[in-house]
Image (tube, rainbow, N blue to C red; front, side, top):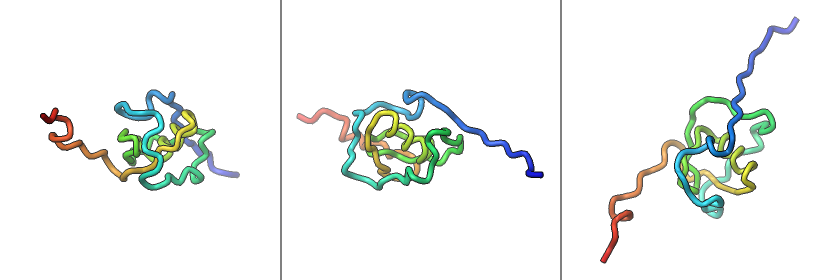
Length: 97
């Protein structure tokens, strides 16, 4: 007999996959390509928090969620960096005269 195995899958709408707002396409030409082939996106993504910052400057809970959002939106957001997105410097937000 095989032991019973439980797998928790998280299904989210595209609006709940990331935090923040940005252009839909992001900066597709920069960053590192996500390893989307490692995930069965048809079955959803795990809830394990292993954050990645996308080239659209949005924080994704894990690489799978970035891939899932790309699939849902037909985009090619890449991984800008692993971990939290860096806050912009105060100078980049201030008006310059």
